[in-house]
Length: 425
Image (cartoon, rainbow, N blue to C red):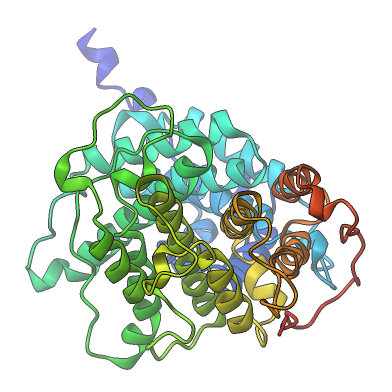
């Protein structure tokens, strides 16, 4: 028995890049798309390092699996079929092909035997692939798997202050915060329990300009998600008691609403994709806070506290849509299903007001009516996810239940290409 255990045959085999069922050139094509379009959203993968790993005669199987999951998530997220020039000429492999390769490599090389950062990041990208495909069960399992890896790797603890490990520590923190943001977005949509409640410091931004530009927007985005705490994320049907310290007061609601209202971020962002992400997340969190306010406080149409007024969702939608007036649609489309979730939430809050106060928005009182805003968001949803988007269908179902909207045609056909989002005012 001892002799058998010591033989090289039982060692974990090394994956040869040549055994890949997808060509290395195809990997490179998708990795380049990720670097150009999605790195600002998921700054947790070193593309040049992955390329080098794939070129090696004896490549690291965890890196190969990560690259396959990243490519699958990229193709699913940016909806290349909606773009004017959908695919590079030599890219015929589908997102499903990359997922199959990732899962095959993981099983062949016993990925679950030892936790690693590569395994965690792979699970994150698998979650993003499944979520964009509206495959809820595997998306949930992949997300929980990534969070389990984070626990096993102790990413919830503050990093070492040792400067030698600063780069690795910052990567670990970014992975943690990606999970923090991703879990809230996904679980709010599907009424699933949130597990990552601990507040952790943001990655320290280094002194050089490139680092500041790269991470400033990402850190600003995470700051917005810090306000999505237990009162906002417990499912309506939950029987769990909310601790007194978790309850938002009127004053705290008003204060948070003012602090997270973003029209032009006070940051020097070099990425329009980051700008769109911050704008959309701000509008999304503001609508969650307003819905919380509506469930706990007496709202009014004449209050001096705007966040506690009936028509506040329309103000949120108006601010948001105005801020998008000169933004390319590709910058919204890059955010995939997460963008759709947030757009739907903003539209639903406006429709909540219409149902509660149908006479509040007369043409004589309100130049920009609620349906103007909702139909503008409907247009964005169709451009981000296509006319078969599940979130677009949900919005259409909601509109069909409102009598005032039945005489207004839904926007089911759009120009094939839109360079920028149209302003509505």
